[in-house]
Each structure stands twice: as structure tokens, then as C-alpha cells.
Image (cartoon, rainbow, N blue to C red; front, side):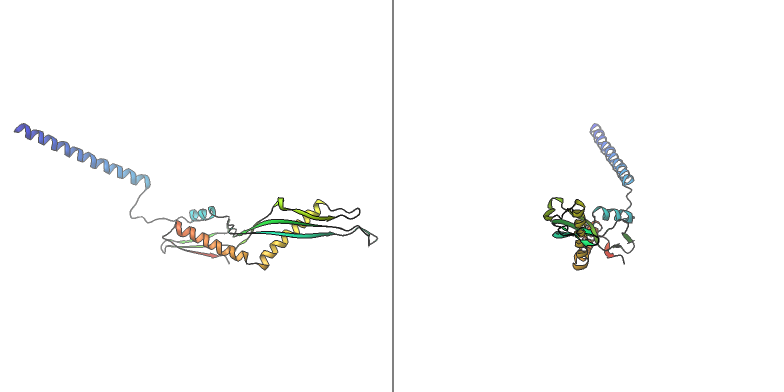
Length: 212
């Protein structure tokens, strides 16, 4: 009987020792986890305005609107003159056609303002209004429709470049003065940034407006 009691006491002691070892191990593991991740149950989430700005810049060019166009124009060169009189058959003329792509959006590099109120859980972002960010002509689309060289007065590559520059400037004026493309780019920029911030920071009330 005493032998059986000793065996039972031995098993009980082993179980107690194992339980104590597991408790100590769990405590140490929890301490290491807390130290590694600096976890503090009383500390609320911290939002870094610099990190927020970097994330906004990462997702954007912000080229939020793009238009493609095809245009043509005619170049007319002045005739040669002698003593102020135009010489016959010396005027030159050509017509070219080309396609291009214009990208628009706010230039946020250095123009982005973050106003974070953590107590009110509010994030206000101000951005500049959209502008033309890039304008590229597809070189393969450039076609000379016709050329009429004058006597001793031929069309030159510089004439072609000057006409292309004139066409690009005209297209940009058209966008700024006769379309609502920049306004559409503004709307898409607000939508894009708001959607991103609401997803990344669901606990914050996000407002995106424009610099005045």
C-alpha cells in the first residue's frame, strides 16, 4: 500500500513540476513577444503624417486623366524676296498629321499638405489642382501628308519640328480653355486618394480638398 501511495505521490509531483514549467515558459514567451513588438494595450494606434504623405506619393503620379488625340496642320513658308518683292514659285508648304497622349493630374511633389488630428480621428489632405503632367507625340504616327518645295526654298526638318511644337501648344490650349479634362482629373484625384486613405486608415475621417 505504501509503495502504491509513493508511486501516486511521485506522479502527482511530476505533473506539478510539468505544469510549473509550462507556466514559466508561457510567461517568458509572452514577455519576449511584447518586448519584440513593443506592444502596449493602453497605447492607441499612432499615425505618422510623413508616412501617410509617402504612401500617397507612392500610389500616384498622380496622372488621373489621360486623353489621346490625332491632329493635322499645315506649314506655309514665306517666299524668297528681293528688294522687298516676293519671288514667284519660291514659297514652300507642307502638311503633317500625328497622334499624341496628354496626361493630367495634380503635381503633388512638394505640394501636398497633411493635417492630422489624432484626438478627433480626422485626416485632412490638401492637394494642388490638376495640370498637364506630360504630353508625348507618338513618333510612329507622324506622317507628312504633302510637301511643296519652293525654288531655292525647300522644307527643312526644322520646319517640321516648328510645326509639331505649334500643334502641341495648340492642343494644350484646347485642353485648358475648351474642355473639362482638368476638372475631371481633379475629381478622379480626390476619389483615388480618398479611397486609398479610407482603406489604409479605416478609423480616420478623411477629407481631401484643394489648395487655394
